[in-house]
Amino acid sequence: MNTRTVSVTYHFVDDSSTKTSKRRRHTAARAAPAPAAAPLTWTGDVSSYSSKDADFKVTSSLGPRNIPASLDSEGQPYDFLKLFWTDDVWQVIVDNTNLQATYIKEEKPSNYCARGFQPVTIDEMKAFFGCRIAIEMLLHKDRYEQYWRSKDSWLTRTPGFSQVFTRDRFLAIWSLLHCVDERDVTVDKTDKIYKTRPIVNYLIEKFQFYYIPECELSLDDGMIPTKNSLSMKQYIKDKPIKWGIKTFILCESKTGYILNAEVYTGKSPSDTTFIEELGVTGSLVVRLSQPFHDLNYCLFTDRFYTSVTLAQYLLDNCGTRICGTALTNRKLFPKTLIRKKMTRGTSERMYNGSVGALVWCDKRPIYFVATKYVDSAEDTVLRYSAQEHKRLPVSCPMAAKAYNSYMGGTDRNDQLTKLCRIRRHYKWPRRLVVKFFMWATYNAYVIHGYLVPHNQPGRRNITFHAFIDKLCHDLIGSYRRTSVTRRSIDALVDNRLLNSGPTPQHLVERAAKASSNNRCAVCSEKYNRAKRQDPKAREADLPKRSKTVYRCCTCKVYLCVGTGDDNCFAAYHSRKEYWR
Image (cartoon, rainbow, N blue to C red; front, side, top):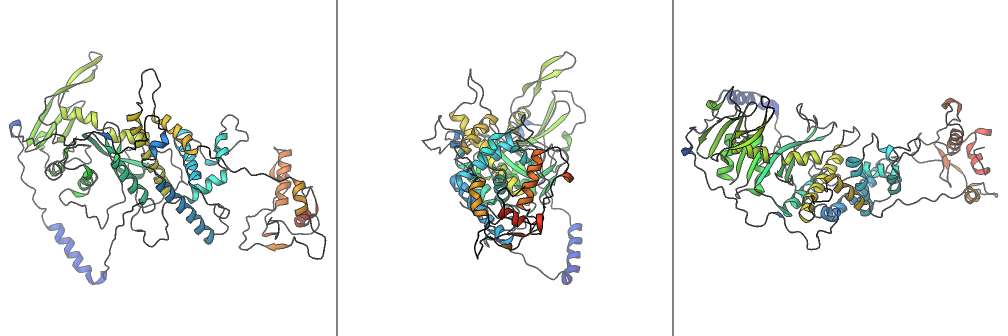
């Protein structure tokens, strides 16, 4: 898998020697006038509008491309997912997860997840993702442990999970899941998402390789919910998800197919794609749409991104059209177009060369900047009339109607692939990996719809939820947990009882790096049997479960060492029923 490495060189200077000069430079910068913008002449005469060639320049067939001949309408959901989430991706995750377990075992031998960790395989990792996506998208419970709970939960029991994984094995894989080797000196740790960077770069490349979008594209942002303590976390009060990691997504408007994406990590000191005249937001739009430049694609954006300068730049330098709502306080926007009150259905337009600005009143005035649909004839939309108690046609400019039709592609994708409620113990790299997997799953669903129509007359629609349900079963397949056969007491008694002779095999030892979190096996057995006999008994009335650092050097079982009835070591090795 190819990964992109960015080299960043920092030069440090003595701050004390330059403190005065810095202050002077900042003062001069504040005093210096801003560079004058190019003069613009806005006019309401449509004849002044110079529409450049707006023909869509993609001549090949739109939609899926480079699809293997073996993939047809009989393909299963996982066959489509393999276009993006290939065996190379599985191998990277498996190798780095096993490597992380080795590191943790060396550093923390008593770590509960790592100390008995057996290397995970690709088939097991696929089954793990099948269960993990089912937890995320199909069946939600408050805690992971509840998916394996069987006692007192006959109504909400989920026995399928326990057939595939033990609870501890599932949580161990989830805790150690990794995509990169953090000890590798070649890893660029100045990248804030370096822990997931190889996966997202690989997926974006595959997304563009297997699909040619239609002319209309939408660009918007989304939130990946998290409340972890990290510098790139955002708080946006007007969003449904207020806390999280912000992502910018470029999608095909019709289907919501993801074409390009970027995780917001703050301003980079080595950002070579920054365009001075456009600023950070405009540079982002140019960067995300770069693979589709010079083909006359039309980009739909909301008012956070749209500006007159961006519209002109995309048209002149990138061969890309734009249509979006706009803020009236942005530079170069014609102030004479601003209206406080208008009648519903009325509109006004102004032109400046190849860029048009317009205002249309729905419930209130809405402003647009566009380089497409500017000189098109007006159309109509249906709006409810309170006076006549029915929906009536209302005049509407084509720019506004096209925006309402094509802007929702990104929102559609973000809604269907959203992750469930925030879990505080859900570390952000794992959350990103799950989100990337959902992106790949949604794109697989879109391509699946070209070969297998999702809306067939007389049949139930194939929804994204149904697609995920089938995908989870495909991922798990025939994989089942390794059954643990417990030997009977009679089979163990000969090995457990003390040997007669001058050199007994069962001796007491203090375990290396033993913690005080190991419970005595005899005390635990006494407690468990008493609890089963009287489930309602108080904890104070049950046998005490002691903790110890001593164990048998042969049995490797932790046992109390004492005198008389408190000598669990002697009871364990001398009695068949040692709990009595």
